[in-house]
Length: 574
Image (cartoon, rainbow, N blue to C red; front, top):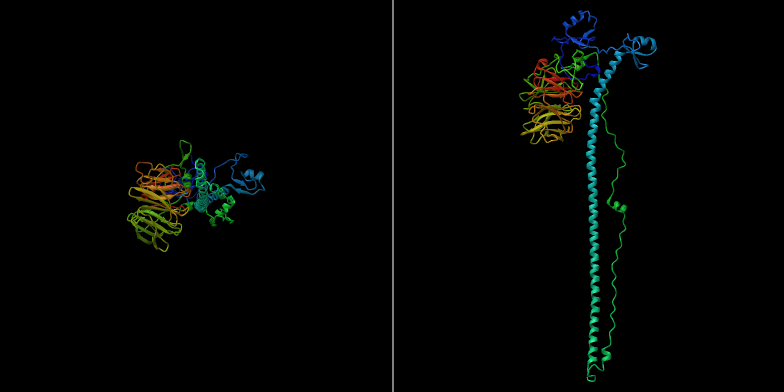
């Protein structure tokens, strides 16, 4: 069963053929009644048939968007084809005559077209402005987190340094005080030792005196004893010497408090400054133009939307979970083409807003032309694969594998060295349309990685292994970024499209439909679909590894090896 119109996703494709079974002619007309593109011959047959002769057929580039037929509940024979602006309900013509005669009525088709246009406009604004700016705000917040952490760490270090300085000062003062106390102790001990010796000498004196008394008392010669007459003077006891008690030192506790110490150490405060509101880039005032009745907006240069495929009557299938899936192939035809002179085989494309095209070939030349095919520049860069990209400023940057640098070509054609990659060979590069970051696929010996740089050339992030330590990349020779921040890389050696999220965490690897999948050019569209080619087919995947569509060589009429989606969401392949 076909998908309903509200379910139709926008996908970049670029071919369409007649919707009649087995007809391989180019689509030139569109039947608004049965929703099918037709060639001129099928249109004539369609008009001759009695069942379809009254169908409305218009040129292919002006298909009308018809609403599903819905009967009025009050008047089952009438179709709902109007909307009452006063009551905000859809009505049929009979309802309008009976109950809404004096109300403001509008054509339901017109109202639905206006709403659909508004939805497309909102989708574009959300992807191009709101998500981009919100992600910039998130990046700014992350920078603030880093800055605040650095400032807080600095404050902590200052506090610890101040405390250590205070501790050293306390230790010094304490050491001086203890030395002073030691000196006091030494002086007091000397004084006490002198007094102790005084009493020791006095005691010795008394003991000698006692001995003399004992000698006298035990003597048998009283009259001939020489001390007999002087004993009273000789035995006179000298008084006990007087000494003084030493005065010990007294400790007086210092006068301090937590507040006083905090004042000495300093304090942490938040400045009384009004926080600045984060700057949000103003939205573009020019409205995005969508015309549901003119698909040429989606068909410029090799581009259209999946809506055309579904109105052609292509059925969707259902998987085991009951979800609708897209057909893997359908009849297509090329819309338009242009040539780039002097190029043998295009390997990569970069297209500027000014309509200038940079292409690289298999002989190592980087060539700039305008859309009319006039060659403007030619550089022998020796690069391969997806080695050049345009920055948000409109400058071209490209990798120089031999010298291991990334060079910049300014709009005045001056060439300068932009980033040096050390020991790593830069082989692929992409400038983010979300924030201007630069993603570079690199290789060294048998290792490979993806490195993120800021728009000024500062290294931000390195992605090399998954959370199990397994190498993610072998030869990341084309690289792009999805609207959700995923980094999508076509890796020739891994034979896979390797997808990691913006933090570098591995998400999945898509390895094609067979055993010989060798992915080349890769890009993403405005709704997050991943588009990759392998030189034979173009694969369209969703953000979660599901194959949505497959264009084969017979449908594409060529061998696509490079893909590019410009700022107007036009898909180019070569």
